[in-house]
Amino acid sequence: MATRVKICGITTAEDAALSARLGADLVGLIFADSPRRVSTDEATRIAQELPAFQQTVGVFQDAVASQVIDTCRMAGLDFAQLHGGESPDDCARVQEAGIPVMKVLTITSGDDLRPAADYGGVAGFMLDRPRGGPMFDWAIAAEAAATLGAPVFLAGGLTPLNVADAIAIAQPYAVDVGSGVESRPGRKDAYKLAAFLNAARG
Image (cartoon, rainbow, N blue to C red):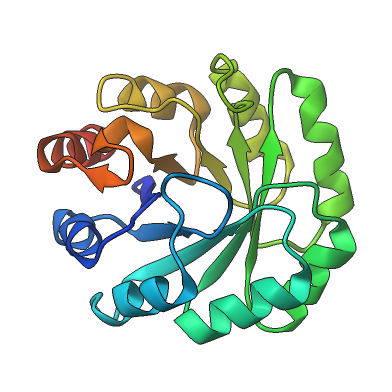
C-alpha cells in the first residue's frame, strides 16, 4: 500500500486546494500556539472548499477534550491530532464523541515509545522530534510500526530531499510535513509540495 501523505500547517483555502490537487491524503489545520494557527471560522471555510473525499485533521496541544470535540464538529474535521500531554482518558473522550484521535509521541530514543501502551484504542500514533530538536533514528519508527498495533505517522524534519529515505527505513503508514514544503511560515510552496509528494510516492 502506498504511503499516505499529510500536509500540515495549512492556513489558506488556496494551499489546501493545491495540496489536494497534488494528491495529499490529509491536510492539517493547527489550533495550537503556532505561526500557522487558524481560527475555527477559518478552518471551517478551508474545510468546506476542499473536495468531498479530502480528509482533514485538527491539531491541538493540551486543549480540553470538550474544546477539541466542539472545534472538530464546528469545522467538520475528520480527525483530531493531540500533540501535548493529553491523558489516555482525554483521548478516549474525544474518540467516544466519534472523532478518531492521532496521539503524538515526542521521540528521542526507543524508550519514548513506552507511553503508547497507555493509549490503546487510538486511531494512530504520530512520531515527532522535540520542537527544534534533531531528527530521531527512523528505525525507531519501523519498530513502532511493527509493535504498536495502530497506524504510524512519521513527522519531524521531513523534506522533499529526505522523505524517500525516511519511508524506506521507517515503513510508516503515513508521513507528515509542514515547514519542509513552505515558502514562508504558513504558506506552501507549489514546487516543494509536488516534489515531496512525488518523492513520497516514488
